[in-house]
Length: 136
Image 1 (cartoon, rainbow, N blue to C red):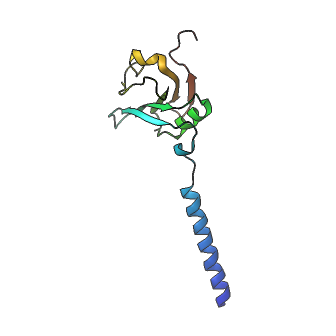
Image 2: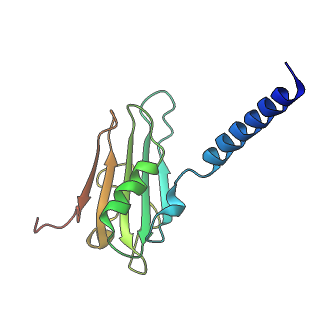
């Protein structure tokens, strides 16, 4: 193999490696979403031998339903576990702690919850708008 072919192969390998690195570091994520999402609080069970339960309270600027669902999809999830995200409008009352039991948030904050995202045990997900609104 002559010298020019070796140089072309090295250049091709460098370009391929560079493209792979760029692709790895430019994946979309939570920071790319509109709405200024801010995690307010988080709770996780300490069960390391069974299903992992994660619950988040998050604030955002507006009721961007598709963005909320995408945010939930970005959150960590374990097979057979559950991940819940409660969404609140920025500046409105929101919980500073969550519970692993019941509805997960205190009664006084339920009226301010605009959506609940849930990813279940087998990866099925749902976004419920105004989950605590009794008129639904």
